Image 1: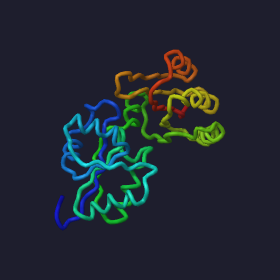
Image 2: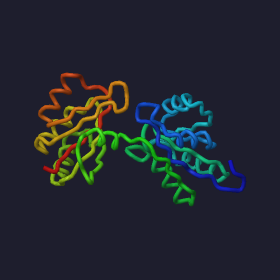
Image 3: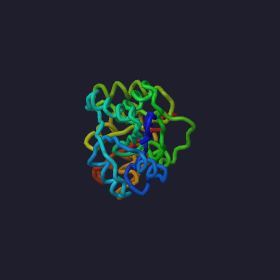
Image 4: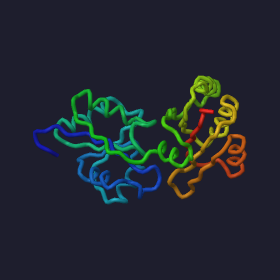
Length: 228
């Protein structure tokens, strides 16, 4: 804590699965801040314990009240530095991280990003697809009608897409994708950086049966090459 100075907000990327993937800088920052705000304290405490980081922790998630966010900003106004982490990866991608960052920026606080792992770039690196640009889409609607309409909207865009999907919706998503996009080259990354990491690469007509044969468990990142 710095007396008579406003604190900073550090947006800290954390591992997406393998705890050894955290950066030296991220560990140093988390050890130096006064408070750590996180998506789920139960998840974050495992990471902090691994690196012997002992700091006060506060949970901030999609359903947190404005009062909860204001209390964190108040701590910063009193000179305390805050580190924000999500359950995994870089805050701001399909999680509530940017809400705190936006509020801090609007109030004139310094916001410092500490880069690190993302499922997006890990999956792209393992896809074997050469590209100059891509479009991150993330999770689509769990409702079939809305999902199909969004896919139809995207189908006319010739680029590489990145989707996230949960295990219980994965097959339906891939089947809709095949019906709307045709049979594009696709890479499905399962449990990235974890013990049971696996990549399925090829046409959807081959990938879907392979996934069904091996079982649908874990978290998935899907890369779709819609340029051809």
